[in-house]
Length: 206
Image (tube, rainbow, N blue to C red):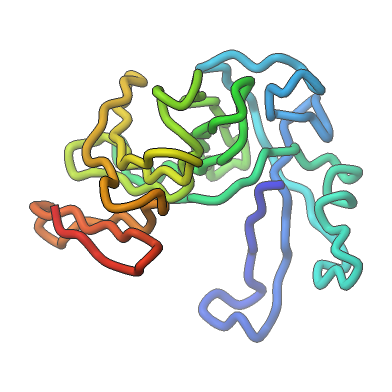
């Protein structure tokens, strides 16, 4: 599931609100993972999307995602990283599915919210294998318009860039150990990229 929360009183979370799951219109409960268990989704394919309210969201039985699918929510593979970017004066949301795609090495989805609720969802990138990009989770928009992606794969891990046209390029490789990169972010002036290596817990400035 991909969720959003609509507060009853913006700025005051204690007042509660509505938790919703993303629905691909005319395909309730669709499996987006491209694992062969659902429809094949092509790179760049676009869908109209909406949202459905979820009930009993505290889910003591751990079944919220199952009930969300029954309610029409789309299935995604290990959703982890999410970020917002401003493109053409509008807010765009990117989120990653770490094991999504036919190679099970990752997907990046692009969501364009619309005031009228007619949101647009696009499969923005899908890994073809470890050498392309490997189980990315944390992502961050770069000042020059690309996405910065931190890998959490099983072997060598990279921080990679992803251009608007879909080109993937390496920025830095972890030569210290096999731990994952995480938390990429830029200095306010955009001149320095900070990124962490989870183990032993160090921060790099690039």
